[in-house]
Image (tube, rainbow, N blue to C red; front, side):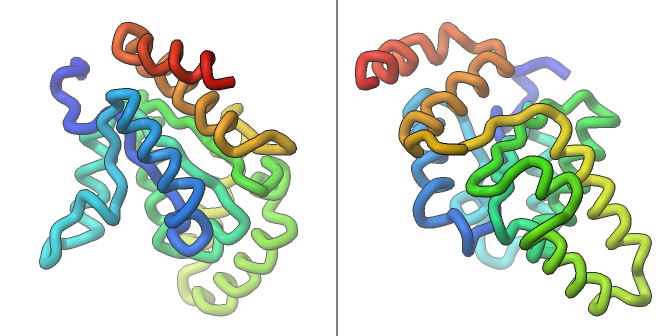
Amino acid sequence: MAFTSYTYQVFLSFRGEDTRKNFTDHLYSTLSRAGIVTFRDDNSIQRGENIELEIEKAIQESQMSVVVLSKDYASSTWCLDELVMIMDRKRTAGHIVLPVFYDVDPSQVGEQTGNYAEAFAKHQDHFQDDMERVEKWKATLKEVAYLGGMVLQDRHESQFIGDIVEEVGKRLDSTVLLAPYIAWHRYRL
């Protein structure tokens, strides 16, 4: 699929309660300032639309996804279903996926320990009649955890966000588009 046929360059997947009003908002704003057309569910879906269909359509119409895996990402069945759609798109259409580990270790995501283990204990109780779905979520988290993403660790969020935007630019191969932003970002640091 040619670049011009994409509606969005980036689909932003995140747990709203964890990061919507801080990290993800700053990431979205920085991507937008860099000229990267980004889908974020709270901005891009109109009232009255079928949210699930619109999300699936947005994933299909995006060149890549940035998945912000936070402490409570796995507690949201919505996020997990969205992640399954993203990874299915990666396998079937070469969709680019950049995992971002925000205050969570990749091994915790992949092995479902800590908060992720707690979330899955609840999912297993709630979805006793649909354990296949729960197992698919687990396998998908394991797959995304080992893709090689970006980890916040001990750095400042603003620097981390700048690094994410640079990585997105590299993966989209749009350095001409990002050149002014990268120069500005490097100057600020």
